[in-house]
Length: 229
Image (cartoon, rainbow, N blue to C red; front, top):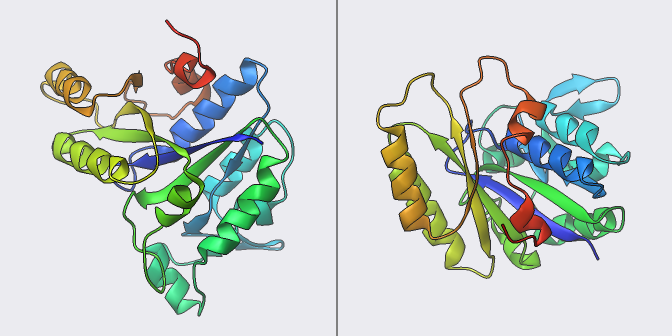
């Protein structure tokens, strides 16, 4: 049975896809067979093959082996709006049972499955509940991507608190610089290290042009591999 790692964020647009792909790249270079999953995606394009989401395609490309798109991204919606609203417009329900059964099919293909969430931890689901019900049902380990900018302390601490109230283990956090200049960044990182109580797995510098390989080089995956440093 593969190990599952769920990548969540303090908000939308904080770099979950970049960190997910970077983690997959880093694991692959260590000889780990890894595949990705984007359970729910909104903001997708119509193609000859059907709706396709850019983030889900990036995860598909980053995998150690090919995985059918329908398994990588079970729920795909065109409007770039909250997933539960997109699902409502499409007349669909986001079924945790469907997501878990899809995950079980994927986990047979690799040693680690990197699952990228949508938005933050408590994004609503449709007709009720939250998208976090899915990783909680599987008790996946969680990595929190913190968008390093003004307001990140409150967002990170509240998100960590919500994760740790449930059955999932918060494995660590990654700080991603979203702006060229962030005043008192070192003090903010120190506060996060003190208050989150889990390892910082990497600090990604601001990138005008995003680089998966560049981000991967900044990640410490030893805790994920069970290596003490």
